[in-house]
Length: 60
Ligand SMILES: [Ca+2]
Ligand SMILES: [Ca+2]
Image (cartoon, rainbow, N blue to C red):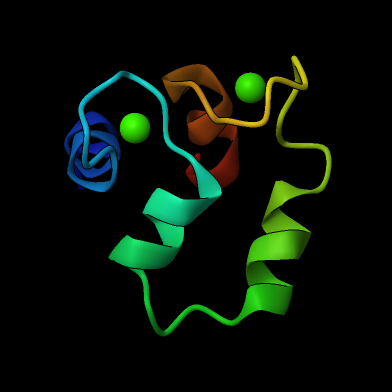
């Protein structure tokens, strides 16, 4: 699977960052607890959104 293509698919507004809201919209079946677990420590620069680099760590 092409990780960048997945990232772009989740990045609904194509601003180059994935937010939790965009993740929830893309994976409506994903439990909030699972998202919280993923998000813990993932947002390396603490700006409240995930760059492709941060996202790569999530799925890579
Ligand atoms: Ca976005
Ligand atoms: Ca970030």
